[in-house]
Image 1: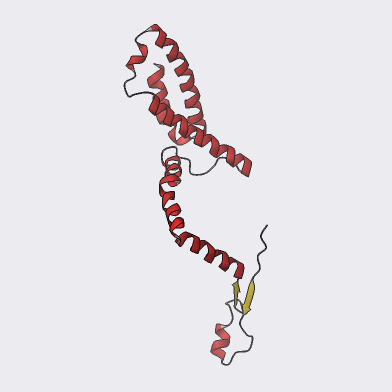
Image 2 (image 1 turned 180 degrees about the horizontal axis):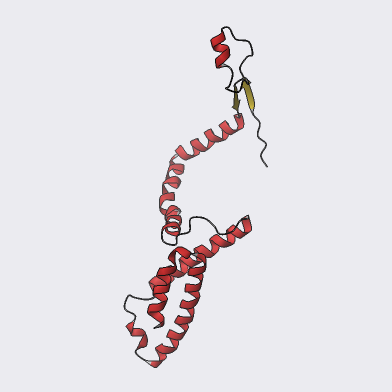
Length: 163
């Protein structure tokens, strides 16, 4: 909703020498123009001043620890380099499912230790394993359908736990 207001500076049609006249025209023969947006320049200077303040520097430095690792993990581990759908609402849903998938995988890795043999020692735990297998199937389905690059890894994990 912002209106862009440009000031246009154009070279004069008549120059002092033929060399300057040739420099004042583009290859297609039009007069050279320079466009200047004072509002844009003001906003750039304002943003620069905010970022160079002590609080702005601190907030910007925290971006490396707060925001960037999440998207790096999403791109590197889950292979999501672009969204599957178009449109603002659909992209929000797609990214939301991706973040939910990341949270589920974090939960899975924190919940269970590396040695899973303790799950099958008694009958009470066998009921839990059935619930876990259902959750694992849902987890694998979401992983394969939304992150095809991790398909092989998820299939290996599901084969390990369902056998």
